[in-house]
Image (cartoon, rainbow, N blue to C red):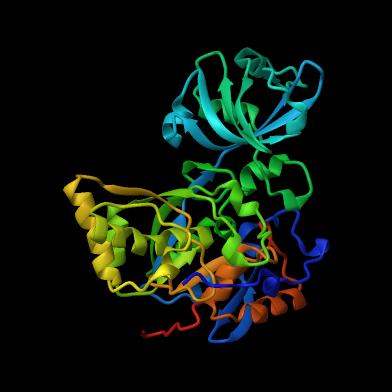
Length: 408
């Protein structure tokens, strides 16, 4: 049954001065709030390894933010911003990034009303020779309000990944209310980012340093990666009074066969770094259900977890994915998810969550509330009352699931 949830029950006052506009000089010097069994205390992020149970498995999202914001201009001088969201032709990220002359992307179009459909050329105010030689242009294929399908063309035989690196800028969140600066190229990226595709960082990972990662390994905690490309939908507020009317965007993810096997056979706790890792890991159960019932994986729909009871264990579900991969000689699962995690959700895999502090009335606050059994205000009231910094460049939290048991 789809839950009926009023989004205004998840509102809190977030003053502008509580939003961290810039990262701290050292990644692991941010504050860390711990929530365990209804109690809240605080540490510094570099203390994280000592707060985690030995023998756990910690999962990171190794997606990499691409410089997906491109600034074009019309012959009239009007400036049009093209924000690349996801590839259309070719539709695979790696194939699109490898294109050497043209590709088509779904984009957000800034100043869209000023674009009359003529061919745009990239702004090059500094007269950079490499940029000029590329002659990057944009043609409108179709438009749907502020979004549209745009064909990008360029010269010189550069792969599109390099075109973006040279011509684009990192798309920092709009709530920072500032332009992208040089520091964002490094700091709006996790230390372990590998696979290009996100237009927003999985920000829980921004606090990790080599020192923290070494401490985690020394604690006897195994680490692994998933890859979920974070879409622009992560910035979208819930505009409907009832959450049941809010549409979730699809995000593609990849999980290795080796990790799925580890998840099926694990005996320790599962720690997710970031809400994107949670959504990926919890989606695996429903992917497994589709393998059991339909013989193949299918994307996870928004309300699948709430529509009926599922009789299968996690081991059965993950086992079905492994059987499918083996039968098709695949070493990784590629799928997509629109899953929304709200109060009433049954967590089947994740025990512990590392995450930042999120916007009021957002789907991420709903996820936090579901994870801590509805006690999200205890966490946020403490953070607001103890000078924690909020949102992407803000401080961090370590949340133990509401029914967490050390030995369970």
